[in-house]
Structures are given as C-alpha cells and as structure tokens.
Image (cartoon, rainbow, N blue to C red; front, side, top):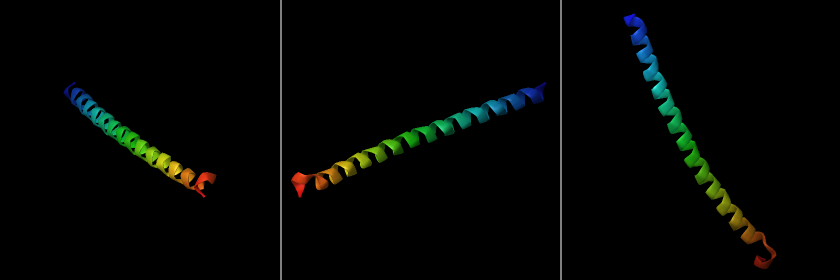
Length: 56
C-alpha cells in the first residue's frame, strides 16, 4: 500500500509541475502574440500612411 501512495504522490507532483509549465507557456505565448499583433498594427499604419494618395 505504501508504494501505491508514494507513486500517487509522485504523479500528483508531476501533474502540478506540468500544469505550471503549461500555464507559463500559455502566458508567454499570449504575451508574445500581443506584442506581435501590436507590431503588425504599427507596421500596417506606417505602410498605409505611406501608400495613401494624400502622402504621395
């Protein structure tokens, strides 16, 4: 019975660590995506400003 409890405890720890790792990955991806989207928006504004007829 002790082996089963120890194995279960190790599995619980592993699951918690995996959950934390995936949470960190998701948070980092969300930050990266937001930063990328902001950069894309800035580039679109800059390009449209250069390409609009009133800027020729």
